[in-house]
Length: 181
Image (cartoon, rainbow, N blue to C red; front, side, top):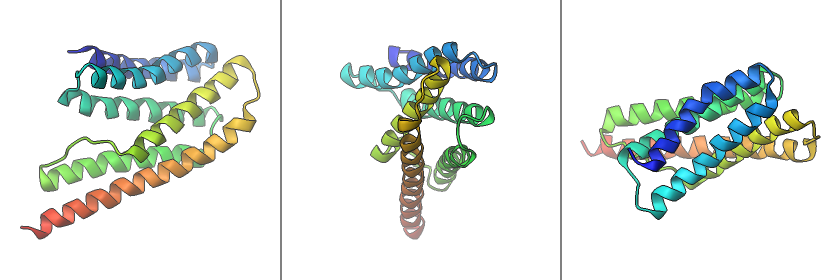
């Protein structure tokens, strides 16, 4: 188990802690743990690429950690009234669609490779920034409306585009494979 994979596992383990802290309205602690989790997402990738530590396990584990973190945080923030319901539904639906689509694609083709799209990486960044911004504004009592609202719409847009891009890509590749049989 290398350092990037350990960081990813730590991010997964942080998820229930962050959720508990948000639901108990311990927002300052939630902010610091969420910020560390968000930073670990970037750091594990940088270390893996820079020091040639990319592994097949990491290629599967990293998106699982991202989905666990973001879906859970968005549900908790939505439950507490900090995020609009439509955005929570959109984020959860997109990730369920991607996971379901990946499983279906793998079942049909036996050739699933975990290669995140650039639009998906951008979406993850927007989702992380929005989540940490919301938790931070609640923790430290600052008005984040000026950045929160544009981040909400940018996150919504990148969520839709990312989900649609995966669906179109998988559908096209699965059709090619099915047509070749």
